[in-house]
Length: 146
Figure 1 (cartoon, rainbow, N blue to C red):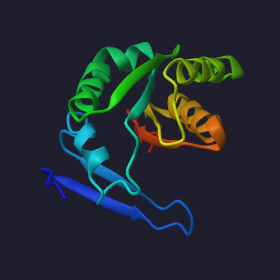
Figure 2 (cartoon, rainbow, N blue to C red):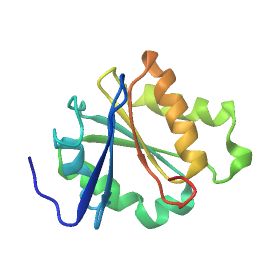
Figure 3 (cartoon, rainbow, N blue to C red):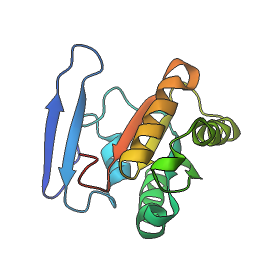
């Protein structure tokens, strides 16, 4: 298990699909190592990742998250969707599916939502629907997304 500075791991022990919530200083720069740590993510994730965000969030955090994932050996593709509640549509889900297909996401792949409520909702729905469900990681960037 890797040690990370200033982190709190909160287990959510559901009967099915238990998961951890991680609060961490410098967490965006460490997302790649976090997703490889079996104490945080179990079972292990596959190497293909689709990073979903919007232009505003991507501008500030996208390259940092993408670089951390790539440095940890993940094969990263991204899908940038317009920002705002009005874009929470099937057309946006279709764009995520198109990116997943282009990147050849498999059952062991992961979708990562980098953004608040709209991005998190759409990425979660897309991950649950793709190939009868693949892993999803939420990286909220708004207080309301928590």
